[in-house]
Image (tube, rainbow, N blue to C red; front, side, top):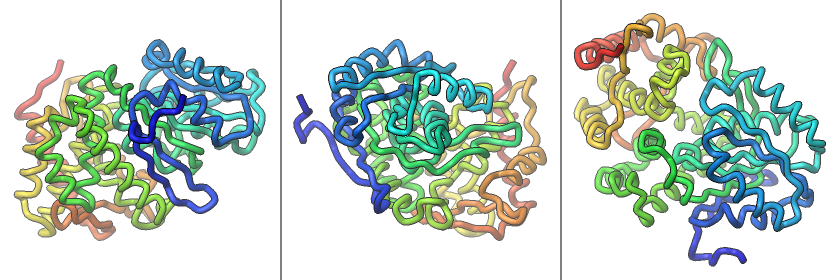
Length: 383
């Protein structure tokens, strides 16, 4: 039977004819078949998941879909950013076609951000576009990547440089899936939660300073509040600017620095995406302070909060992966948000006061990066 209304929260991403609902609560995975049948006429679903998630939740999802009359196929990917390649995309779409996917078929992304990105892109391009549903199983995916329709894969030139805007039909967020998420992954997702407070909601940031530990310990009320507030914030920005030509770019706070760091580490797991974003947000505030836009105490406050919770606040260094400020600047220049060779940065006039800036002096960026690398060298030495 359907969960009682009080068991989950509901909000809408308002995009006119492409509007869709986000459902947030516990026990929703077992109801996914019914919740999916409500929004599609077809009864063929192709599930994309990975080797970490499949043993935990694939059977529950398949059973729920079967109860609602769906015929299913599935693909189980290797976990991690290295799966977001042209080769994996091609193999995935060949599996979909072999499973007789048609335009009335539905792709279901069951997993974290990597699964959602590549499954969504496969759906966007298979048969010139078929529908898909997001069932995010990580905190990062639940508060960020599953909402907004960004899909894509990585290339040698950077992260998510090939992709499409393809909105899901629905996002089904079962908070119970976070109980099996490793603590490090949970922390990485928390960085994306904190981002919403830093962008334009100082009240939420203050709330997180008091309730961050409860969120990370999966306190039911605190977790639901954090996810719901994050999704409301993202839905608002996506609704105002679906294809990121303006205010939606504020969601990239910390990402320009963070993506460069991820690329420098060759996506090898040295930094998870959320960890890179946490470091990137500190760098963005450091840059803002260097430019006289905000107070250094704002950065200190963010750094203290992240350190207290256990998030990294500087790039880890090791002999096999030396970091260089000039190389990181080079990586930023190929960021997909660059325009006419100029990188757009998300800077801040204070906590909750982010804005877009294209007038950043390259020497200031290099200085911030060098400062971060010098700090890291004084505290961290890897094998």
